[in-house]
Amino acid sequence: MNEALLRHLLTHPETYDVEFKRQFPEHFFTRGDERQNHARAELIRDVAGVANAPVDRPGYLIYGVQDRGGRRVPFAASPEVSLDDATLDQLLTRYLEPVPEISYGEFRLDGVLVGLMRIGRVPDYPHVIRESLSGRIHEGQVFVRQGTRIHVAGHAELRRMFDGAAPYVSTSDTTEFSALVQSLRESGWHTAFIPHQQVDERLGGGWTFVHWPGTRRRIARPANFDGTNLQYLIKRPVSQDSRAE
Image (tube, rainbow, N blue to C red):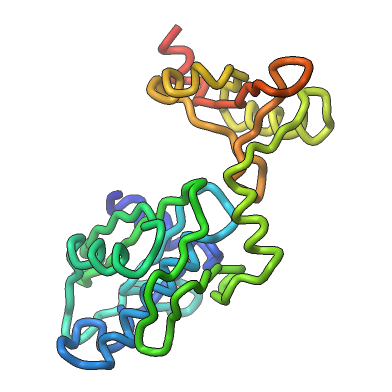
């Protein structure tokens, strides 16, 4: 993460990928106070909601910005506070299972401290509340961000999440598949199907999985007649592919 990424995100609309906040939840840094637990529960809920969104790309929480005339500009909180990775990791490890892939950085924009939290989305989800806190989050809850709203996941959403680990098995001759591959190529990606035995080697060489749009399901096709073996669709930038050759 860097300042260039932060400035780029500030030009985006708020969606399930990106959420903007003026500051951390009130009393988040107030030690020894029940109000701090309430504030921490709010942050955990926000992280879980973004982590459980139905896409495979990372999501972001940005603290320290406000909307001014249709533009997002830094918001100077008083007093200025800073969050460290250790505190964040400890909090999420205690209250979320599995723990999301989180990275956090702080940058000064126009003299104001702005926090950028990157939330990686992984096939091993949903992220479930492990322990109740302050009456705001409860053990066993699954939060999901839909649009700009976070709510407790319903049956259909939970089913989609648990299906996320199962490959989306397709064939190369479907209209939907052809359109997806064409879109990837037009966007500068080279694609290939590989047997599952070669997955680790290829991922180590700069390739990444292709996921079915709107899900975290890796795309695969049968490698033999009875479908017991699969080949996975992977991609990497055409420029990188050319250098490798």
